[in-house]
Length: 73
Image (tube, rainbow, N blue to C red):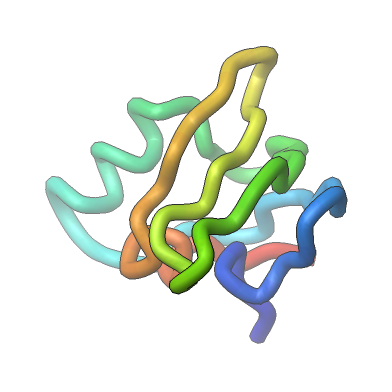
């Protein structure tokens, strides 16, 4: 299983599935990250936290723990 945390800078990936439960999953979905959504990885901080992505035309920073819950292809 490949997660958003494993994606390389400059890569555009597609969300396959969201893991996690309840409020955490709801928060990720509220940010616009849903199934079959393309996500472009813009930057990764030096220590890997956070990851800066572009989703649905806006920029978003995601914590490493949240990025691990987003399965991609």
